Image (tube, helix red, strand yellow):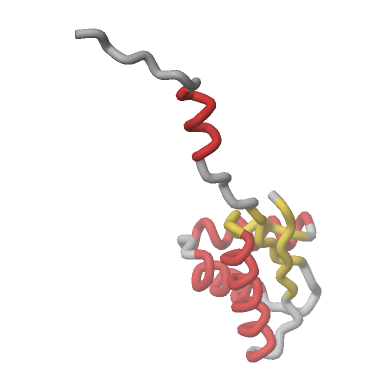
Length: 103
């Protein structure tokens, strides 16, 4: 019995079928002179599922470098997290700023 040889290049065919990964975005908190450090730490823990130690480290980056990365996500998730942070800050009457940018 003869085996049938494939006529096309399987590697090329598979690469055409492979879905493209979504673009990733960094969620950053920006420093300001009014938002309490404790609020920033609690916000990072709440919305980015970080430990107290991780949240404190990010908060110190925000404080000393002007901004800190809380996480990297696909665009829709990054936008949702940014909006959650902004809403929480506004409800608490803090001027904390949160932005996203391409990773």
